[in-house]
Image (cartoon, rainbow, N blue to C red; front, side):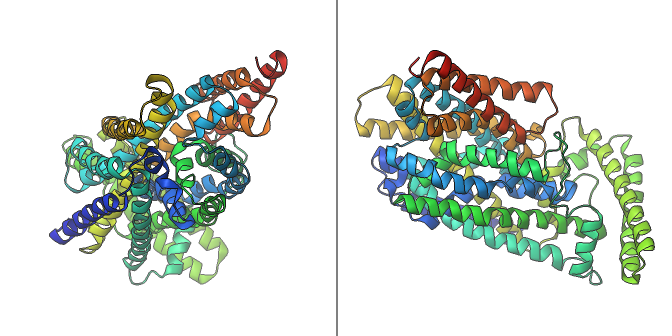
Amino acid sequence: MRPVDWLVMFSWLAFIVAYGIWRGRGSDTVRNFVLAGKTMPWYAMGLSIMATQASAVTFISTTGQSYTDGMRFVQFYFGLPLAMVILCATAVPIFHKANVLTAYEYLEQRFDVKTRSLVSAIFLIQRGLAAGLSLYAPSAVLSVILGWPDRVTTIMMGVLIVVYTSLGGNKAVIHSDVVQMMLITSALVVALTMAIHLLPAHITFGNALSLAGAAGRLNAVTTNRDWGDRYNLWSGLIGGMFLALAYFGCDQSQVQRYLSGKSIEQSRLSLLFNAMAKIPMQFFILFIGAMVFVFFTFEKPPLLFQPVEMNRIQSDPRFPEVQRRYDQAFAARQRAAEEYLQKQASGDHELREASRLRYEAAQNDLNAAHAEGEKLAGPDFHDTNYIFLSFVTNFLPVGLVGLIIAVIFSAAMSSTSGEINSLAAVSVIDLYERHVRKGASDHHYLNASRLATVFWGIYAVIFAQYGKSFGALIEAVNIVGSLFYGGLLGVFVLAFFFRRVGAAGAFWGVLAGEAAIFAAYLFTTISYLWFNVIGCVVVIVVGVLISYARGKDA
């Protein structure tokens, strides 16, 4: 990073903190702090919902996921539009009419305080873990650029986030998210443009698409029915829909966004906006990763993209042989790529297919050599999260590097601020006010909410230190969520649609659902997207059976 890049990055960080504090003025009651006084228009909520989900993990890891595994991760979102339509018809009007501050407050109205407390605790566990992972992502940025300790970066980010979130509450979060999404969108366009522009002069955009397709990097839709396959059409439509229903319908970090709306109609519009925009946005991000893959077909990538580990393994006596095999495989892949484009232009299908197979074989050899390099770095080392950052810092012009890095920090601040704001709300409203200090003044609970925000910010910083051991961060975040979301979704389905199910059925149904999810995680190879379906179904079945056996009020 050059001085101009640092200036761009720090100027943006200073602006967004100051802007959040300014726009968060007036958060002087618990209702204003948690729900922004229910004054938000649909576009602000819609962008905030997208920004809260589009964490720094999305930009760092999704591009790397596409580079290594192609674009099939986009299928993860295929069920999201269906989920948004369902939530517009169910959760939005129900939560608004119940006049609740949190989604779990509604569970006490519908069932009892025991069910509310159990589900609140589950939320705090899973969202607290996710907040730490979201905060870890930008620490990877500075470790790539400067080799700074992760601890320094996470503390810096944690302080910035806590400052404007604890002062301005949900209003500060939503307004900051709006401007951050504008920058994020602009930077994505710039990143894709540069990835294509930096290709060799003789490689057209059409050539780039052909090479990406031949390497399996444009595999946006796969229709196999393998239960262990994480990303295919069926897991995306069904498992992805259940995950989206749970995330947007039961996770307070999202519910809190659209409960801040002026009306039911405004809240619905915010979700429908995400239904239309989310898949194109994810497709765009994944496509950037595919184009970066093509770029590194002609520009030799390092054996490891993480420069600190790359420098360290060079002293390993096994390194020269691994590097030699890597260099040979890269040269073979580059020759095969050029040959493939020539044969494609000739129109001879058999020759083109033969060259494609050579290209694929060379790619496999390169992958094997890279895997050997990762083994030199250690059994827990994963290089995926550093691919996009290596491209940005080494090949983008001055100023643009700072812009992209600012975007990654912005995304981390957007997602983490929304997460700790919702964690604070649930901690105070669902647990502290309900069980610890009843009947205190609104001012007391407002101060408690601010202190809870600080606590969860510190918690996220501490847990972020373990982020490096979680592999591809985009998968880690979704796996953590899927371990808990099925149980959350199931209990809300019981609450909304099974009027004869009582408190006992709901409580034990949630525990049974979580047990089923962890059993599937520990003892099967089923893809994590199906955990959401399994958990939800088990909660419903157990809840209905218990209630019908013992009576609704049992």
